[in-house]
Image 1 (cartoon, rainbow, N blue to C red):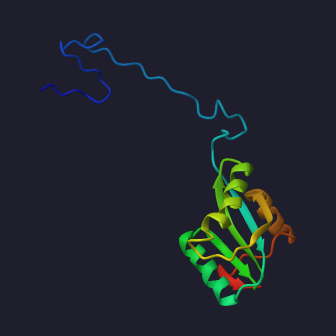
Image 2: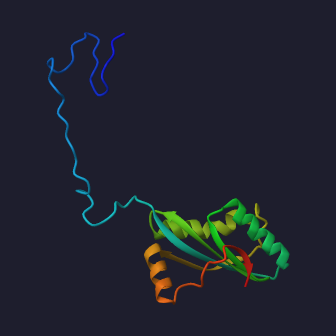
Length: 155
């Protein structure tokens, strides 16, 4: 068995494609040539999502338990606030663009209604903002109320 240096071509006849002692030429691609000042379209970004749901009254303990189960199933959830007839869920979503982040958010409640035993409430509000906007709002003092403490809490 013949040993071959990494990157060197091996051939059955023992003759390589280069003359003896000839080094392979290396080429490089300058970083950032394709993305002057912008990120590629396929790079995921972080989006802050606030999903509001509402419906007929349900026992507070059942609402809390359901939201805790949802948070357990999906640890990306930052905070959930709830009352007996509405709730608000906040979390960060990684998605290619706003449309993808919104689509995932709009499916969240319905897809987990049965597994987390969520109340049969409808989505009544959705806000999806990029990370820069979220931090700008917070720094200017008019952003969404702080997500701290993290977890499931009554309104």
